[in-house]
Length: 396
Image 1 (cartoon, rainbow, N blue to C red):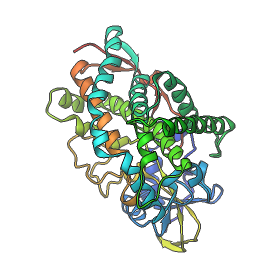
Image 2 (tube, rainbow, N blue to C red; image 1 turned 120 degrees about the vertical axis):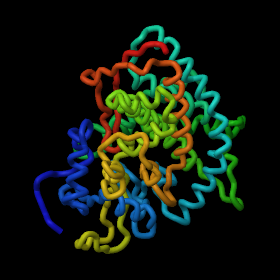
Image 3 (cartoon, one colour; image 1 turned 90 degrees about the horizontal axis):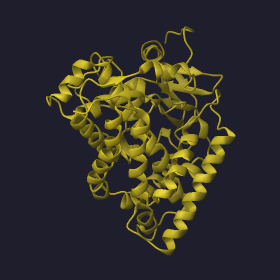
Image 4 (cartoon, rainbow, N blue to C red; image 1 turned 30 degrees about the horizontal axis):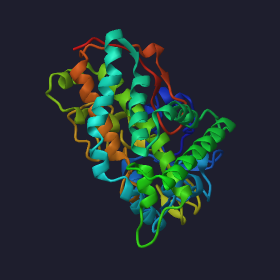
């Protein structure tokens, strides 16, 4: 394999927030197996390699967790089933699925639509908004209602989740502020669980406590980990998907016109955005045995980053991959993963994004403006998107 020292890749590099695409192309073309010895990880970036790794959990283990900041043999203690392998992962996922059912997700559609209209109405009167704030408020309310979080507690949960997702240590370590926010949020959910044990309701928290397969039930720490996953990563990635879709349509007026004319369904907008600039940058895996990859033997125990965002721009799978094309076939998109670890919240994220964008097309004129010079990027190595996105709109 040809070596070059032209570039260095680390997901914590702040330069990757605004424009990671040249680095990702370099990885795919020049370094399909990349090694950062100083940081202690290897990287796969081509679609074929990332897909194969996801489909082989026996070789690419999740037992150290999906993020560098949490990389540890006991990651499941705080991250739950996403840091487990079969058969433990299979059992926990089945238990969680008893509460997080497709029917429970589908029944949220009217409420998502209602919330979107309620948040949008005053913004249409003003004519200007921070689209990132708007896009965050709806998933927070949806997840909170699903879990059973009272309205009065939602600002606190939003504050804690934002702190948890702010990963500003250049070396990828968890800062004291992040650790404190994690502890506070876990404590909050422990209190909510205690309340639901005493007085069950028709919400996800109660459903997770009731879940049972042949006498096996979720431990409290697993319920807390699941609620934190949904209440932090779940709402943050959906918000970032919405802000990216809004900005990409503004940057590509030809594609935007096809949406506002009704030529294309909003679902195409969601799926191409997931491929083109999906919020999830990478996921980590532990190699369970020595394996030859691209002519190099990678040792057992190695940390391997599967760079999702790079794989979704692989020209070997998506012709003209750097073109934002709402008509393209996106069926091989890796935004939500594959196999055992396919994202449990994918259907909810797609539903939320589709409903919100449908309501925007219905209510807002196509010639909205985004002030990209005044926008800012979220400080996170593995969830990419805008922290602020100033926008001006006119009522349709």
